[in-house]
Image (tube, rainbow, N blue to C red):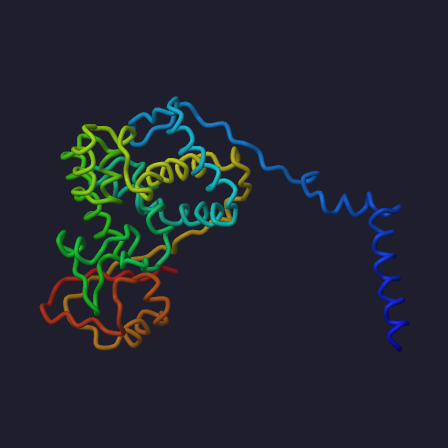
Length: 300
């Protein structure tokens, strides 16, 4: 094809395209492009009775209202993440709830654990690990065994006990569960320093680091959405949710030289064993001190 014909062909394509978008098919094109006809993003009405562990949220204050609105919008319209958190909550809340009660923490703190880790086995960029996202230093200070072989930050029972100790000490120091939760994010020293400098004693009156500013409201948003999923557009059936396989516990006070072989004795693969005992970080348990450990074995 010579140069003139190529130019004519190109002009013809452009002309036909313009005619298509300005002609009889325009309405059909708009019906595809304008997705708002089928999908609406609605503003949310904030509940007036929001509270964390029974401590009221002053939602009538404009800055508090905006911060709460932000987190509720994020956790409502990030639909895939919201649905995943709902599914995982059904899996782990039944374990957490009796542990929180046993250790004297309000039930709302299960939402703090969810906000921290999303109930997934990942280490944060700063090294926090486990359901409660403990740093190594803090975990060790509160008695958790943390090394290459064993990391009890991944033991739900032991890490929940430590989280309860930390939070109750913060509550004694600040006189508020809300400030205790904020201190879980920013540290007791960091919160105390800012409260003192600003001459305030209430979380909602303090100017805090950005992450801590959002932290309490994210917990509150998760509580609101998970307690009222249909209100925020999440539709599912009971069997869509995740569940944790039932287990029995055996006590071990010796070394396990090979976890693969140990698991096989109980009809498990190495992978199945690690799913139920993520605190064992290697394919062995050293246990030179003959410490008593509890190992979970799935029940058929």
